[in-house]
Length: 276
Image (cartoon, rainbow, N blue to C red; front, side):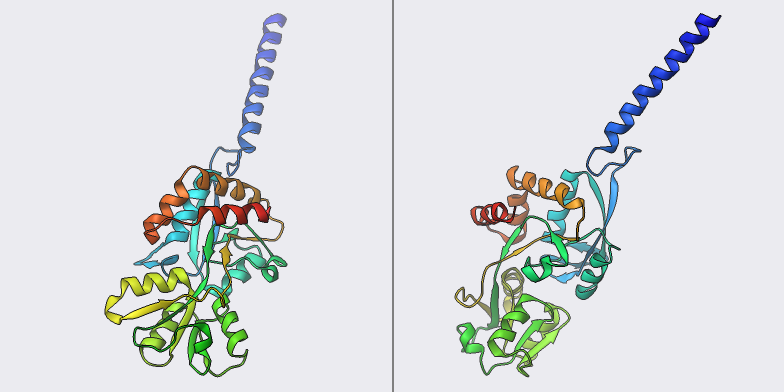
């Protein structure tokens, strides 16, 4: 009877050890909790920046959203994406009330002091949106003109440098949609914003008779990144996943679906290597 009791005890201990090993392995998997369920992350965005992130009914859609979903799937995380507006994004991330943000956020040294960024995932540059009959042909021609921009963006920063930080000729708005509406209503001569925004708007609204002006000599190339609280452990998981979606063709497929052309993969990958 003692032998039988001892055998039962040994079997129970063995089962517990095996079970414990299985639990430990599960908890080490990226994005997976000890219960085997994928961890849900709170993501914040400013869904007024088509085609990157915008509202379609009550749903948030866009290039950034499709890209992030592909990366999160690769990393093993579920997402809860909330539209909070541009300025609140940075408050939510700094206070760690949100896990990450995606909103066409340009990586720069100033923001790096307060936040962590993922590897770069999008190459952008500011361009000028004007009416087809406009005499504006370059950034230099914006002097003496009224320019509409989204407040807190690199487009605004570029105009601050060109026209003066407190220039009355710079009209600042909460989003680019409002900036474009201001130009269309005659309240501004031009809009300066990221190329993806103005190019898609001009293409999708041919009746407005708009044109996009590129001035690479005046506007530097920029790179977008996912925004994280400083010191987060999520960055490593997402950087690894970003590399995978770049390598397996997923990124290029999503890019072509939204922009109708291939991305500059060579320049993007070079920037990713330089960012390590």
